[in-house]
Length: 363
Image (tube, rainbow, N blue to C red; front, top):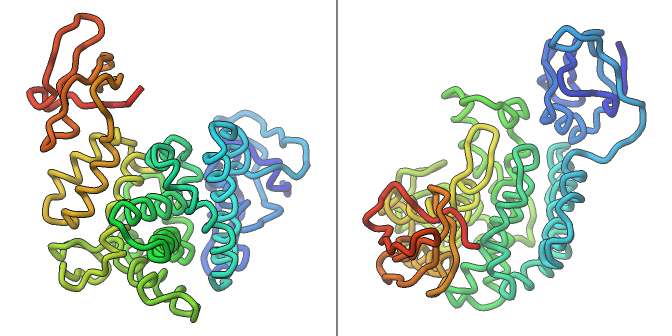
């Protein structure tokens, strides 16, 4: 059955490889359609596909009425508008980044003039909306993660650079570097990026090349500074040499890369992804501070943690055990483990004595 992609529904069966202009199938024959596959077909601008007469559950496939529909990402963005003017601006940026990403997948170079025109005004607003910036993970979802992640990492990196007292030009450069650090993902086989299960060793090896692809894409743009390129190349490197793609150590890491590394990990771990469950921002901060000790620049981490844990006595919180309470005292050395008065009992607990309990959300 030959249908328009706008008629696809979850559960129908692709009966012929969808190739587009790629060397490998974008969606393989016998694939059971999920929302992510519909999004991929939209991204590659595929208009028509071959499907079977039955759904995966055995029922008869009834195509949706044929008409052009907004993409899943555009629909999800529309649903989330109105939270605040800054968030609306951010969501517009996500939609713009998605369009750029589609062009890169088709082989287009990075249009840095368009990038600057679109995103510099958003970055310049970020300093006045720090609390919005650190909670942007609330607006992401599995299907549109890559677009949200790139824009959020750019904003988080800009914010950290501003707190580190970089001059305005450098702040914006760090933001652009963070924004474009994953542009090389456009060169990765879409089947790997859309895989919902664990990656094979070969697939993970390919994923780890994306910083190199980002660097090469930015190298083709003469007006992009070497600092921006290095930030993109090194955002998965670690100070102890355990990162990728080159495994370089602290003395060879660019300041931009050190900043973006923290932004990237924070946003990734706080988002719902195809193969990972999201975590509380405070759990992530503890991972960066403890589990990842020696891997990140301590000064960058210190500044970022201070921004995330910028709450005061009286702040209402919800804990991971779903209890509510009020912060009454914060130790400088344990900012994610304050003393809390529980709402239901007035009992005072010190989170440092309850390692399995953490702040889930600031209310």
